Amino acid sequence: MICLRLHRKLLFDSFAASLGREKRSIPLSLSMLIAFAFFAGGIVAILAGLAQRDRLIAARRWERVDGEVRSARVIQEAGIGDGGGRSYRAEIRYAYVVNGVEHIGSRRQLLDFESLSRGHAQDVVHRYPQGHRVTVHYDPNNPANAALEVPDTSMLPILYMAAGVAISIVGVYKWWHLP
Image 1 (cartoon, one colour):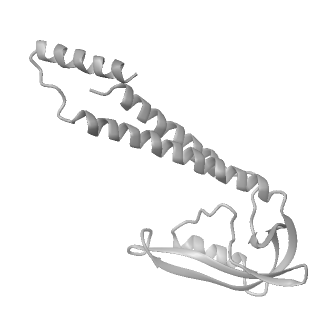
Image 2 (cartoon, one colour):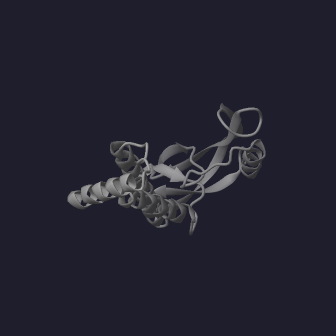
Image 3 (cartoon, helix red, strand yellow):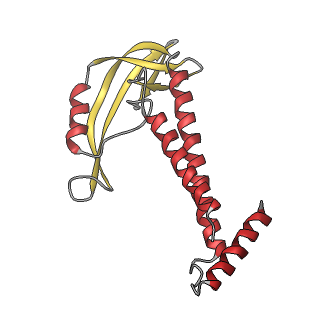
């Protein structure tokens, strides 16, 4: 495979020289690094999508218990988003009891994907007012691992995997078309 690449490079260089054209200005090692980075980044995105899919499938079998919202507030953080470089998230704290032991949870969604807008965070806080009774989904093997919302389906793992495939294809294409 490497011999084929070197042979193609020599043919390209000699063909370009015969036409009086200069060869590309990007060194071969940098082109190879860029191609590998695209391919590796795509693989990482695919693996992240698979891991999220597996978490979602496992969480569908989690136990459910009644809980109570202890606090709900909007947290402002430095970062990107509306409000002049600030981002916002809803912080929901809830209590639930499993096997006589009280746990305090703060994860709302199983797959953490939050909007950066203040309005969205306020909407979430309004859905979970302090004292509100909620259904808590918890991992029976680790009751401290819990979430309020476990979706039946989610496009997020599929989007990660699709993006990973696309990025990997770009990496393979760039590798195949090295100068």
